[in-house]
Amino acid sequence: MKDYIEERAIGIAGYIIDHNATVRQTAKAFGISKSTVHADVTIQNDTKVK
Image 1 (cartoon, one colour):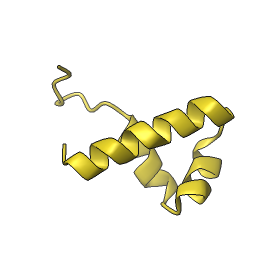
Image 2 (cartoon, helix red, strand yellow):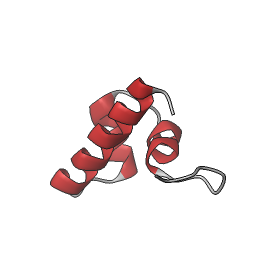
Image 3 (cartoon, helix red, strand yellow):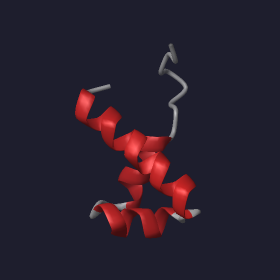
Image 4 (cartoon, one colour):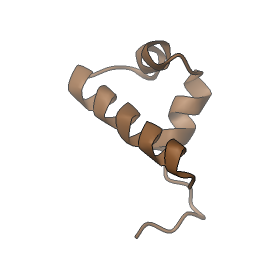
């Protein structure tokens, strides 16, 4: 994963946890689409977690 995407994903995850936010609320706060929020915080089956 590219560094900036990984950093954004960590920020998004933290925001969701800290604010008990929905995907829609998170997308609005970050100025991105709901699809981007979902894609950033979802581990894909073909992604290896280290």
